[in-house]
Length: 333
Image (cartoon, rainbow, N blue to C red; front, side, top):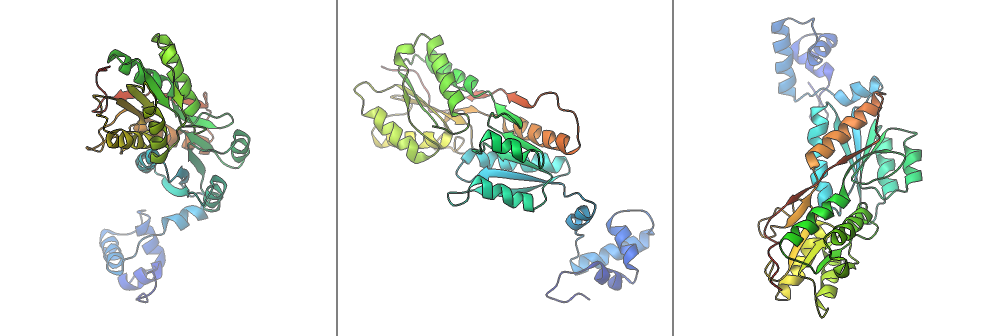
């Protein structure tokens, strides 16, 4: 009988079932060598004791952990969606995830070091800020897959971010908007491509004279600051594209508090199609990144590297889609 304060062991199960430890081990590994009645008795004893095989220890003894480390930013709503989908993709491939968050008090170096200590077989880094040369050094230690950021020296799964802004601007143009502004993401991953896509789309639509890029960021506060600056103008925009959905929620808050109707007075387009955009009271038109495809590809690439497979292309670019909801409508001025 196992001590009440200790985890039951293989020996405890063997004693309860009246068989040897080696026979219990065979049953727990679902290997041949035990009769049906013995198997039933062992499983019944394990259930009564609350015994669960320590598969992690067995894997480590074999030199494997089947763990994929994930570095993510706790401040990113979109990262929550990516992590959720990564769990599914990893489970379907027979792997598990070990998570390590980047917080205001914990940088990427610390987050990454923690996963290396956990003996992860590969890392998946979500929109990392780590410089390219440091990522390249990290790949000499274990496979690294970068998700949602273009970078040299590592395997990359990312969205065609410039194309996403083309979709947003073209949509607004078809609604009759000309004064279309863009609130950017500063130095965040994807921000430069989204700025470029905005400029290209405005130029292609003959709206170069209305190009206006306002400093923004990743958070609601960044959105509120940028939106106030836009509303203070003598001729404010009739439509705004925003770096991400979280920043866009700050924009919506300022517009509504300022008496502006959305979308009747101002249309707003976010980016990511995170869970925030899908909330009924936000109902945000946004550019969707294909989370399911991106995470599935990221896990597959990590496993390819672990198994030493040949990889033809280090970067895979996934097309975005525009999701039209309630924050965009025809221009009225």
